[in-house]
Length: 85
Image (cartoon, rainbow, N blue to C red):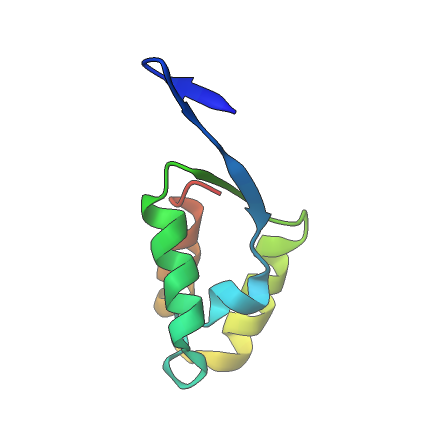
């Protein structure tokens, strides 16, 4: 439990798999559940999100199969790298 100005707050953690994160950038794979995870990662103060060691390699591999433009792949990887993961 973490206290913020005397108010206790429970902080939980979760692991985000690359298969979920790819859905954020590949329209035909997008789901409401994946969008909810992205919103939680981007805005939550009550959760900590971690990624497996191979996360970025898996993202790169999946994005290469799904996207034609190298610039789109780079933009997606940059966007993910800026999230609090």
